[in-house]
Image (cartoon, rainbow, N blue to C red; front, side):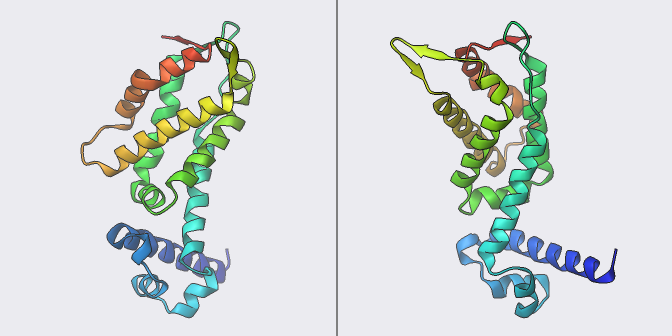
Length: 201
């Protein structure tokens, strides 16, 4: 790798770390480009060589967060009897929380700036595309109408985001596995059963 490439990556990394630390300390709205440059120990011209403004830095971090979710949410196949293994669901959710725990400040920046709703929408889209094979097999009827799958996905993603936001901002130390078990116990299993998907212990 060329020296210039290494220098560029190092400078970008310094800017990102400075931004994340400042958002955690002051809040997104109060962070300026000068703050970021000073924290990263670079001049403003160097900052603008990498990013247009602080929103551009945030967008870069947000894109990274979405990519992290996409890597974790692996497709799951239903069995012939519409069954999902409980341990499979638990493993996926645990893996998500482990990834977030390993980058806690990073994700806290995304959630506590102004991207909570934006990230929820992205997760809804990821859920829909990743698990299309499952959602396409199920149909929920309530008396004389069919419940839209998009409504179920929106509801489930909102519940997940609320749980994630609480976990990442509170001081009680629930492990990723405990969070996975809690989510499954409180909401996950019942939602999947409503979809006609049986949970196999």
